[in-house]
Length: 302
Ligand SMILES: O=C(O)C(=O)C[C@]1(C(=O)O)C=C[C@@H](O)C=C1
Image (cartoon, rainbow, N blue to C red):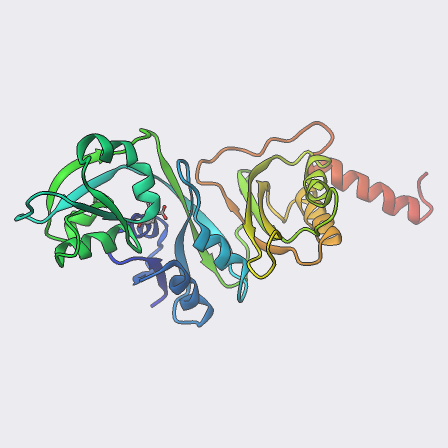
């Protein structure tokens, strides 16, 4: 049976996202984001579900690094989840001195913790559900978890609906080895990563290739190259699908400027927002212009 490896253990937000994206696949938890990606690269799973960005805390570094390093993986779909947390303790919990969770989760409830558990020390764990496991085992006093965690771990619910930012969301990707791409939907996201040259205007040059084709930028993140201090790779998301002439033309231009560009996927956006198209930059405009050049080359038009 086809399987999806998700960033677990059971009861993470990522499991919720994987459930919403699964089409009958068997879901298998992985302890870390790199482990979920490794499972796909090694052929132990058909797809991996991982978080990519949160509206409060920003990009998920482990996912970005995993997409740029090792064998290529391509996003085929995405999910957007509203993120509000539950705070769980043991039935016999006394004073709460430690509160454990994923660093992204702790960052999203900082004010709530200051107001409601002021003396408690925040402790980072591998995921929100890993924090619930650690509380169950007596390592920490409370865990900040996804609401579903309490269904997996018999803990007492101290609070629900906890979120410093009411409308916080996390976006998740379903990753596969490169293969058939999803069909264009009219509301797609295309993602690439490129290590722009350390020279004047190189990043501006990449972004200009999108701008001159009227392609709207959706996200720009930088991650250090690690081996070289001060050098970065850039994750660039933009509207449209690589199957579209306008987007294919832009991706080819990025490749011309930067031969280490890696394609990370073209797939429908979870928010369903249609791509904006500036006058003169529609797919028909690109096709008409290319047809005209062909005709000029054949000597049929001028
Ligand atoms: O630990 C989890 O439950 C996750 O799915 C990870 C994660 C994240 O990486 O941002 C997902 C959503 C929340 O923002 C907090 C943690």
